[in-house]
Image (cartoon, rainbow, N blue to C red; front, side, top):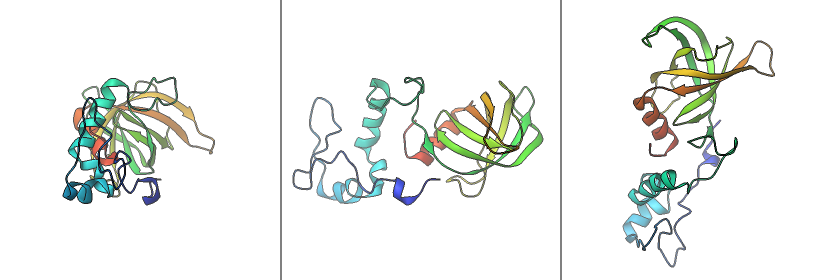
Length: 182
C-alpha cells in the first residue's frame, strides 16, 4: 500500500539549498526562480514541475530510468499500491459481460499494467474489464486489459495475475495516479 512515507517530500534533483540549481538537465543548466523552488522543488509537488516532467520523459527514452527486475524487460517502473478492483469477463470487442470478482485488488501498478490478486483464476490472454474502487485518484475508473500471466498465490483460493492495459486513457490515468508522465 502506498503511504505518505513512500513519497519523497522534495525533489532530489535540486542541487543544494544554497546553489539552487536543477541537476536534471542535460547539456546546460536550469536555475529555477525562488518562487518555483518554493512551489515545486521543496515540496511533494515537484512531480508537477515542467523540468521534472520533461526530464522524466527524456529519461524514459534514453534509459536514464532505473533498470528493474526481469533484466530490464519492463518498460515502466512498478510501484506497490493496494487498491480495490472489480473484474468482469469481456467479449471480443472489450465490452464487460459477466462479473467474475467484486473483491479483487491491485498488488502493484505501472502505466503499462498491474499485478492483481483475485479469488478467480484468470486465463492467459483473457480480456478483462476492471473498475477501480473509491480510493483510486480517479474513482470508478474503468478499463480493459489482457492477462499476460497467471499463477496461484500463497493464500488459499487466491490467484495472482499480470494485466497489460490496452488503451492510452487508462495508461495516462495510471501515470497521473503514480505522478509520472506517460
